[in-house]
Length: 225
Image (cartoon, rainbow, N blue to C red; front, side):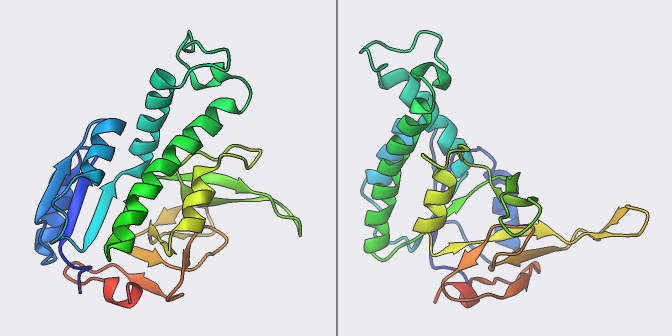
């Protein structure tokens, strides 16, 4: 089961391989929208022509965050009213640039929320990173999380805002076994995780299952209900 007619908003120019994989899985792409910066992305999201679309997928939100930063530097003045001179986000002052990015990114979430209220699913694909998790009960530990802005102060965290906003945060990882000599082995198989585990950030409002990714099969029917 696929999540209805899909429209991909291509921010990474990487849909060539994905399109062939989806075709092999029996999933058609009725609409592909190429965008190249923050303004063209919001214009696409706010445009007409989405009535036949059930699911909007943005690939990738990690790139979109970079565009948000570039837009902020170009359009949001310094607190003294001038444009930042060196054009680095740090030049707004400690933590202030990250807050500008966060506040600007919320406008995209508002755009997407309107699609959600219209009955459309919204999928945001992110690259991964490893992040240290503070652990009050013992040693801190590493886990996979979406590669999105997450200042140490916790303020202006796009990563945590999206976790709160989304119904599902799903981690797709390769299956790897490490032997007693520290050598990793795997067969290239992958698993989709819908519940948080020590090694990955994840959540779902409908399931806590793990799904083996098999070509030609889709887990969406068990997730989107």
